[in-house]
Structures are given as C-alpha cells and as structure tokens.
Image (cartoon, rainbow, N blue to C red; front, side, top):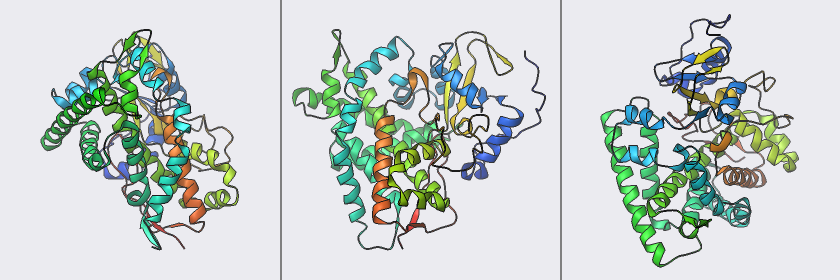
Length: 402
C-alpha cells in the first residue's frame, strides 16, 4: 500500500514563491495530479477533495499535535499560547464543551437578526465612496464591513477597532509563515501579549457591566452547569476576532475579483439577483481564504495509497481540493450555475468554521449592494496582488463604476 503513484513525477511545491502567491492553482494542479499525498518536511500534503473531506470528517484524525507544530514554527511565547489555546486547537471532549458554549451565543438565528443592520452598514460604507467613479473595494467595503461587524458583535469599542486589527494582522502574518523571521516573531508575540491583556480587562469590565454583545453572552453562557472561565472567554474572543474580520475581508474581495474577471457571470447575476446564494457558494469554492488546515493521525492509517504513521501531520490544502476535477467538472471555470458546489472553504467535521453563516451573509450583502449600485462595475487593473501566507485574498481591488 505504500508504493508510489504510477503517475508520480517530481513536483515542486514552494508556497513562498512569488508566482505561487499570485496564482497557486497550476502548482496545486500538478501536485494533485502527480503526487496527491505528498510528503514534505512539515508533513503530508493532501490535494484531492476525497482525501481532504475524509480526513476532516474522520475521528482517526484530530488537532492534538498542533502544539508541537506551532512550537517548532514560532517558538514559545505569547503568540504560541494565543494560537495553541483557542478552542479550534482542541479535540473532543474539550472542543465539544467549548464549541457548544460558544455556539449558544453564535446561533444562526442571532446571525440572521443582524441582516438588516449589516445591510445598513454596507450602504453606509459605499455612501462614503461618494460620487467617485473609482475606488478600492478593500479599503471602502471589504475591510471596514467585517471589521465593524465583528467589533460590534464582540462589544469592543469602535475607536479601538484599528488597534485590534493591527494586532490581528501581526499574529496572522506570524501564523502564516513556515519559517518566520525574528522581527515577525517579535511583533507577533508583542501583539498576542497586548491583545490578551486587552481582552482580560474588557472581560473584567463586562462582568460588572454586561451588555447585549457576544462577549457578554459568552460570560453568561451555561450548559448543564458548565460555564467558560475568563481565560477561555478571552481565547474564544481572540479567535473569533481574528477569523471574523480577516477571512471575510478576503472572501468579499476574492468573490468580486472572480465575478468581474468572468464578466458573463457578473452580468448573469445583474440580470437575475436571485442567483446570489449560488454565486456566493461558487466564489467560496473557486478561491477560498483559508488555504490549508492541519490534522494529526491518531493511529496508523491509509490515505490515498500512502501509509501514514500514528502522529503524522497532514495538511488539507482546501483551495486544491475545491478545484479537484474528480469532484467538480472543469474546476477552473467560474460558474455560478454549477449544480454541485459542496466545497471545503470552511473546513469540515467537528472543526468546521463556526462563523461560516456570518461570513456567507456578509459576502451576500456586499455583493448585493455592489450589484444594485454599480451594475456596470469593472476592475480597474488587469493584475491583482494577493496576500501571502495561510490566508489568501486580494490586497487591493481597484474598481471603476462606469
């Protein structure tokens, strides 16, 4: 069972290369075709949809082992504690307990109640673009919308939102680099230390003066007499703040780039806005934000035709799986009418993204506002520069409105 695939040839996988950052899909296609269960120094890379979906759903794999990977990557310190202690890094039963308590304050009903307010925010941010015939989507909408939404949800003061985002970006940069340099490690550790100190103080204040925000809801969340500790609340809020704004910013930007690059799809959506949910799902499949998620084998197991030892590190490359031709015919074609779009953009299994409904809602609202206001919208550049690291998304999206 451990023989090489018959099609295997030497493939180069260098996620740090500039050409990979701009367009990873040709390299991922080669990897998936010629060595779909690929061994690197860091662990095994999975690029087929079937393999990724099975690993993410399997109880034979879990997150126990992430601490060793993080310790090797970024070393001990506040950033290590910040990332390793979030509930996503745990397995059941610890993960089940934490997630169930957080989910009570993060329900689909609660998210849908926010629709009208998020729609108002989107309109307000686009109003600020005024009569400009060109603007940057990221600056005017894709960044401020999710940033404002998550800050309001968590109850963090608006005037402190910029500082929270600076801390978030420094931590994400550290997390996304396989071998971070000294400055990135120092900045990431300082950001994590300051972020957690800020949250501990905010929790202390909320305990005495609760509000209607998610942080206050987490403080009182209870299930069968069990409640979150102050430190667990701080770690949950830090995780939600990180994921809640940066991932959605990327997804809004990528969705607009995909639609405007594939002009007929944009025009189809302009003519029939009822296809919006279909468009959002295809955008998520086509170019997701979280590019990779790790799992660790709890026992010796087989993936594809390779034998993995107990404790082996496995990385599910989600943007590769979402373009697997065995799962999605003609996967590099952006098609909002695609009948089957069951993607892995939000992971899978017990660790699937808790904030997926909120992300979907914000993408839908952002696209709807752009469609209605600017039906003739176009990209203002032929080359989009993309973010590097674990989370993919456009840095800027220059738009021309007529």
